[in-house]
Length: 187
Image (cartoon, rainbow, N blue to C red; front, side, top):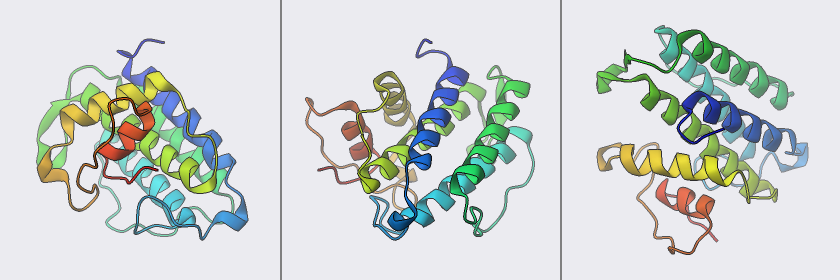
């Protein structure tokens, strides 16, 4: 699947992160994550919230104003249900044309798909890193996510959801570069 197929990349991001969520053990729930405001359980909940928010974006409906506890005791099932709904929404809509994205205004639909796979990919790495799972993940997906972030993650979007860019060596693995670009300390 080519890196220029945004829906294919989204499917790969969903599957990759789903495998990582499935690999999280219950005793790891309280571990810290590279997202300083979230422990592992809170990060999985945040991930499900993000995915549900993305669904509302695709469908043009209103998103939840607060991030409630969404995952219950079966994190994998909650993630799978949300991510399957997101994939279905995009398959119905397609990635052609433009869509209205709140304060961003009219944007290419492919840009929004990129936002979704980059977010899911980054949070998958966050969970893998936090729980001792392998972080040598799908390199093509990591590069596509990094390319999207470099093009789209403008300075005005940093500070709330994303920290300041952290330096990463040119020779660093692509996921370390991605994490550093999203403001995570790597190493």
